[in-house]
Length: 489
Image: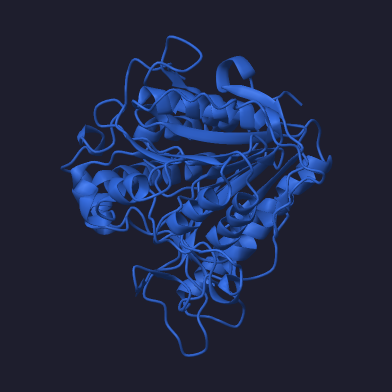
């Protein structure tokens, strides 16, 4: 079994880890972050697309009698006030004005000027034209690392039940729709040191004062921390990959490690590709799927994609909706021609008897599993910009042989994610997987609730999208740029 990961082609670093696993949805991630940060002794580094000072990290009964504030900024500030040795750095993307209505006002005033001097906040505008900083990672005490798609901000919190109505799922005093996302936890100083160097480089490129803190001096605990509800990945090592159109910290050229990794993993697939993504508009990833399906020397694949039914806003529908519709239509045609099984789905929240959901569960996760032996998770959507002009960060694990402990763990991740999306039991079997999911989705679409069936067939391209594609070339639109000077596939 040939390995997928090539450290020279795909990696910022490949490092050993003492503990690795996935935290599904923000309830579990926020709880884990709170508990690790609560015991931080020297340092907390946070990089994100967005931070909101009043996001509640603990909710309901969990927030009672904890002895600390549970909203983000008050919590972090209290840690500095109580521990004179603790330093905190927060690095946020200096967002475009088009997003101003979606952001809390005067963030720098609150985060930087109204907090302890050892809590430092910076906006990072050191990115290419039309790009953004989209990496979401945390390093605590040089020992604990989190990475994935979840920001510490409003409109992200939910739990795995994804109930249509949940009184705890509130942001800025208003309820928001069910929300699905994933974060990876990694223990050990080697991974933390690699991410710490990346953070330090970005901090100083953004104009921050030089970090004199020794990022490689980890606080070693008597017992390894293991977050609650962690889906363990018993991997000896983790690969960290980037998109960074600026000069990379380790070399003179821009890097497209994530794009190359996705393309090579799809090419290597023998039986199964499972993915969840907020958007799918990348022509390189689409070409990789097309080439694999047209390779007549190899067997057919089961390809499962969990997506959003449509963009959350008109802006998103214009930015990537038509490009996604074009790609999904093309891949459907190729699958029919070649005999591969392609299942495209979105998912609805759990409804009580007599209840009807107004919105689907919003898919914000970015994960791909290949043959239950390779898993990558991170911040990168399957868009042109995530593969080229935004800064992104992914973590990947790969098993050494079929049915080893890691491969079985990856299979369990896939099965439990499918259970979350269907509302039914775990589905581990690969053969006939798409047909089974199609049956569930079609029952749900027909209103048959004799069994749990939250999955729905993805409608794209719709008649309206098909009509628009006759007159509009979505690849010519300016919203999802690609850069031709990055390494090609």
